[in-house]
Amino acid sequence: MQETTTALQTAQDEFVAKSWDSQISSLDLQISRIEEDLKQIQTELTSTSAQSEFRAKIDVLKADLAKKQQAQKMLISANVERFQKLMGQELTSSVTDSQINTIIRRKTDDLEEAERLHEGTAKEISQFEARLNTCKEQLRDKRKEKNAAMSKVMEVCEQDIAEFPTLVEEVEKTVSNIKLSFPTGDSIDK
Image (cartoon, rainbow, N blue to C red; front, side, top):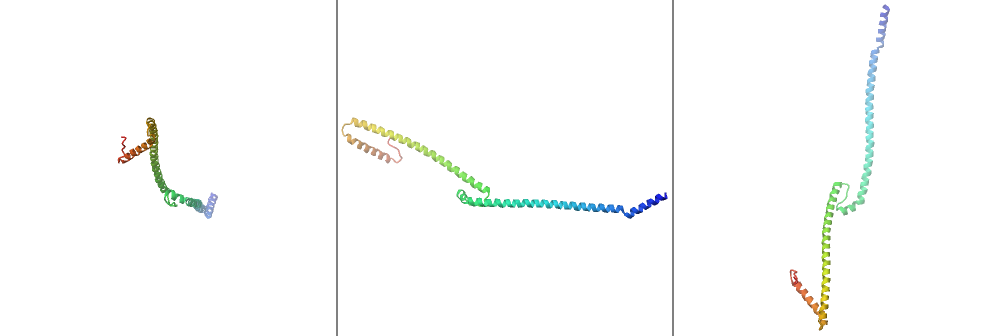
């Protein structure tokens, strides 16, 4: 037993001398610090990677914005006179879609009003043309009646036939003058 106790004592002395526990705990502490540093570096790397990705996206968007602004300027300069002529307002890059839509609505309303007036006027014109055609037909019929009556009178009258057309013209002038002398436009036929 002495031997065993001595061996145990020797082993304990060696163990204490080698300080395995303190070395293991020291190594565990170093490993834990290194893992924390590694996590922090990974977080920074991820953040830096995301930032560089965002920077790349921002650069692409800036380039796209510059192209669109250039295209807008070209489009505006190409259509500024036409826009001014059609809309009555100068076209600039500060003119918004809502302002353009408001102008278009006003112009559309003006156009619709003009079309309504045109339709009304066209109807009136067609009515007047119909009346005119009716009056022309009536006038033709009256002239035919007059010529037929004059023919009958000339057949019946044998004397002074040469003076009859002159006499008819004088009577027509007299009737016309009498009709014009009525201020209300009433005719003597009524």
